[in-house]
Image (cartoon, rainbow, N blue to C red; front, top):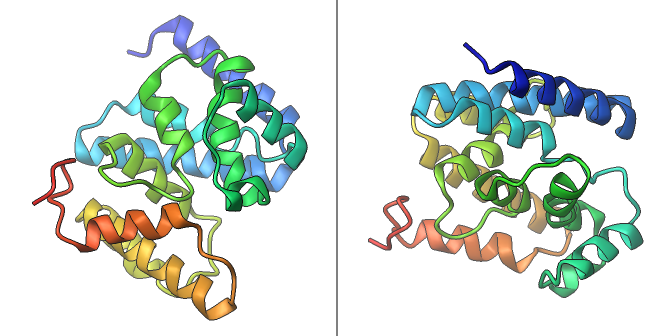
Length: 202
């Protein structure tokens, strides 16, 4: 049975998110939270943490680039040149700060999952991989050509799903002529070079 205080906190956070986020982003957030919880059930992770990380993963998405930068600077988070110029990248790190400051989340595992849900990172934890994947496959997503396969893989082999997401993301960025963030490239190279996905190089 869910702890009553946790349930109250969860409802309060959802209400704040509904107020902070644009409606489409809020619906996306609920989708990511639900898929994160489902993946956690499938792989034996903490479902409460997975749902909360999913709820908070985009909590900074509506902020301006200036406000995101300010949040990160206050926490002395290292930023690369790509992040400093892109809300699409920076909202992850800014969100990990805002999740603690505005939403009262002090769980390091959840904050890490928020921080790396866009680019991933080498040696991701199970929770990080869950949120990274859920953000890509939630029901409101439809544009990526490989989604049906990735949605199937996500519940069969999470590591293969992560690899496919990284591969498709890099292919899309290259095809569209967009700049590729070094962290995404680094994450892909880590997995492609044969890590055993437990955080230890093979």
